[in-house]
Image (cartoon, rainbow, N blue to C red; front, top):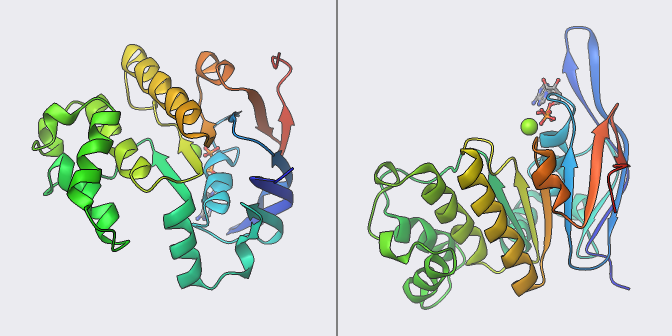
Length: 227
Ligand SMILES: Nc1ncnc2c1ncn2[C@@H]1O[C@H](COP(=O)(O)OP(=O)(O)O)[C@@H](O)[C@H]1O
Ligand SMILES: [Mg+2]
């Protein structure tokens, strides 16, 4: 069985006035097949820290993080940027769209960095896949928050990553819009055989993932709600 995500004894601390602040104290997680995994836990518990390490945006103190069998710590910074762009899509609460580019251009931009041919067509298709091809030529400030998140999702999907990590993707959306975005993400995971790691505060959204974890006291444990 090929492992898609393999995290073992992952530790991360930050400097603080009282010495090191130990945030992750031995996190383990293994995802072997396309599925969705949710992570809940109190604010400040280390969820975004875990996202940063899993997506190669920051470096661990110790332990192992492998994505698609590649140990992220063995990459140089440039290799990591390239590996991440090809294989790991990250979606944030704040959409991080470029304000002076249209929805279509925001998605196209992700491809331009990869030197992909036919970027415009692919970007249009990605916008259609998230249901907002009608808004392709609108700028972020002309779009609702839910539409902005759809653009951010399209920007990730257009690169066909095998792993998508979403850090509170519905955190700045109203409940109904959040549910639609969640629906969209889960459908895409199914259709494209991806792994989704979803960080959320919402127990109902978490419950819709295949496996549910809680990050507490610096370690990850299976939630008792798991069926
Ligand atoms: N770059 C950093 N430098 C110092 N402390 C940090 C840094 N990033 C996060 N922290 C601290 O680490 C803890 C975990 O933060 P975070 O991973 O953002 O938690 P969560 O996403 O679960 O709310 C918090 O106490 C936060 O203040
Ligand atoms: Mg966070």
